[in-house]
Length: 229
Image 1 (cartoon, one colour):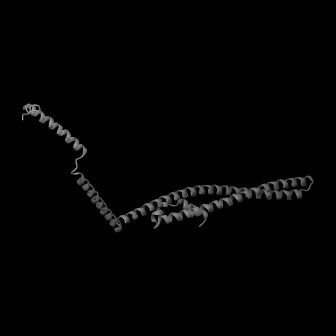
Image 2: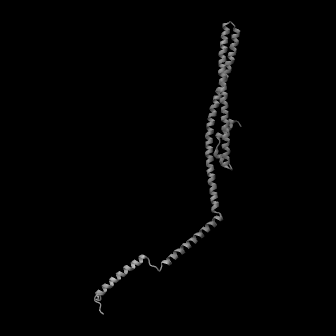
Image 3: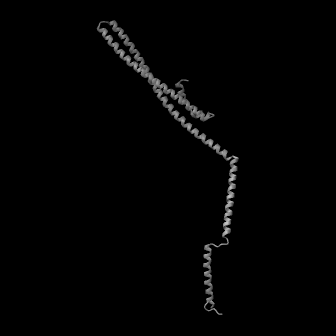
């Protein structure tokens, strides 16, 4: 397949259809990118050769233009010397140089069109290559996400994970039991021993009872001052 045909095929390719039909989309996109990179290198190489050919043709046209001027001067000299035959021969050579120069200029014009086409193809290929690389990144991310989901689901359905979770539950129950025993021992240690607040409250309560008892005694005439033997 020629470089132009392959370039056109790549530019016109439908990546979505190609990837949808592929058994391995990631492998397919790698192949597409590789093909595009190789084609881009070839197109640039062809453009470089075209530019080189064009420059060489320009040099030849300059030489041919100079040659035409030289033959024109020789023709004028021959006429001035009454050598019409030599003048005619010089003009014939001048025409040959002019014809060659005109042909080269036409070829240079053709190469100009080819270079413009190369430039357009290179730009389109670069755009398509960026698109393909973007798709490659997206496909890689989706593939990694899918693989991670598969690993997670496999992990969650693994019997070893279930056993480990069961053991964690057992350990938690043991910790709860140990904490419960510690709390129970703490309650037992403090059950017969009143707290400081309780003792102060008891003192305040005793004072109130003593005051009330003293008032009752006074009301009955049995205060501490009037107590009979």
